[in-house]
Image (cartoon, rainbow, N blue to C red; front, top):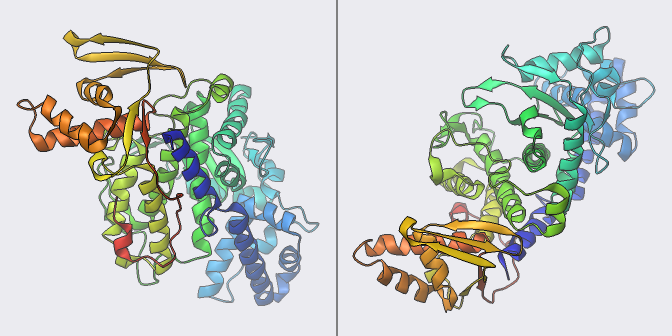
Amino acid sequence: MTRRDVWQEVERLLGTDPEYGDPAAIERRLLARLRVGLTMLADLGPRTSGAVRRCAASSDADLRVMSRDPVLRNAFESDLRAVTAQPDADPLLPALLPADGGYAVSRAAGAAGGPAWRSPGSAWVWTEVGRRGGDPVAERLWFLLGEQFPDRSATVPIEPSAAELTVIEEAADLLTALMPAVGPGVLANIGMVGLARDEGADGPLHSVAGGDRFPSTVFIAPEKLRNVWDAAGALLHEGLHLTLFEIIRCGAVVPDHVDPTSDVVPIPWRREAWSLMRVLFALHVYVHLAVYHGLARSAGAGIRRRFGEPPADAALSRATFGGARYATPELRARHLAEQLARRSQLFTAYGNELVAWLVRALGLLAPAAPGDRAGTTFQAVAPVAAVPLPEQRRLVVALADPPRVRWLNPSAWLAYSLCDGRDGAAIRTEYAESVAGAVPPAEALRQADAALLALVDDGMVVARHEEPRASLRTPSRPTGHDTEER
C-alpha cells in the first residue's frame, strides 16, 4: 500500500464512520433533535406556538434549511437553553419564523445574494453588506454579527469580488474532488459564507466558524481566497467545526460538572492556553487537515491541471511559536492528542470514544518507526533526474508522479540512498554506522526514523508491508489509555 493509498483509505474511513463521520447519520440525529425541541417549545408557549408547531411538522427539506439559517438556528438554540432554566422565558423564535414557511430568512433579510457553490447543501455568500433595519430578522442578524466580532478592529461583512466568489466555488469543487467521503458532508453543514478581516492576539483572522453565536456560518479573510488550495482548506477547517457542533449536540462529551471552557491546556504554538473544548475541536480539525495535506501532496495530474499546484503549507495557520516542531497538522494533532489523553477523566465515555477515534486515525496516518515495524521494506522511487551538490550538502531530485522537485538535506539524502528494498532495521543500522563519530547513536536512530517517515510521507519512498485492512472502529468502548499517542 503506497502512502497515497493510506491517505485515501483514512479519508474514506473518516467520512463514513457511522457515529462521527457519516453525514447522513449526523443529519438524521440533527433533524430528530430539531423536531423534538421545536415540539417542546411549541407546547410550552401556547400563545405563540403556531409558527413553531408548523416548523416542527415541516418536511425534512424545510427543516434542513431552517437548521442552516443563522438567525433561526441561533434563536432555536437560545430558546432551548432558556427553557431548561426558566420554562416561562420569552422565546425568540416565534417572532422570527415566517408565517408562510420558507426558512431562509437571513438571506431574505439581505444577508446573501447568490449560492456559494453548486452542491452539496444550499450555502449562500453574504454579498449585500449594507445594514438593513426595520424587521426582526435583519436586526437579529446584525446583532449576532456584533456578538461574533465585538472588537472595532473587525471589518465585516466585506463585499466579495467576482474573483473571490469564483474562488469560493472552485474551492468547494476542489474539496469534494480531493476528499470525496469527507468534503460533501462538511460543505453541507455550511449555510452561509461571509468575508471578514480582524486582528487578534495571535495575528490576523484567517477564517472562523460561527458556532453557537452565529450558527452554520463561516467567515473567511479575503486573503485566504487568493489561492484555491488555501480556500478549500479554510472551508474544510471551519466546516469541520460546524460538523462537530452537530455531533456534540447529540451526545455529551464532558460531564455536567466539568467546565469545558476553562483554559487548561498549554498550546506551544500559541500565546494563550486553550480550553478543553477548543482542544477537542482543534484535534478534530488537525487530523482531517493532515489527510488533506497528504492528499494535496499526492494529488494526481488531473487535479493539478484543474486547480494548480498545491502550496506546501496550504490552509495551515502559521505557528506563533514552536517553529518546525509544530509546523504540520499531524505534529499539532499529536500534541493535542497527548494533552487530551492526560485529561481523559474530564470526558464522558462518548467523549473519550471520539478522542480515541481521532487518535486511531493518526495511528493509521503515521507508520510506526521503521525499526519497530517488522516485515516492512522501503524502496526509493527512481527520480527522473538527480544532481548532487556535496560541497553544499544537498541533493536535488526531480520525480515524475506527481511532477515535483525536492531538495534533500544530508539526513534525507542518506536515508533516500539506503532505501533499496531493505527493511527498516537494516536502514537504521547502516544510517547509524554512516554517521558514527559525528552523531551520537540515539540521535542517529531518531534522524533515520524522521527522515524515512518524511520521505514515505512525500511519496519519494514506498513502504511495502502486509497488514489487516485499516479500521477506525474498535469493538469495545475505549478507556483513557486508548488515547495515547502512537
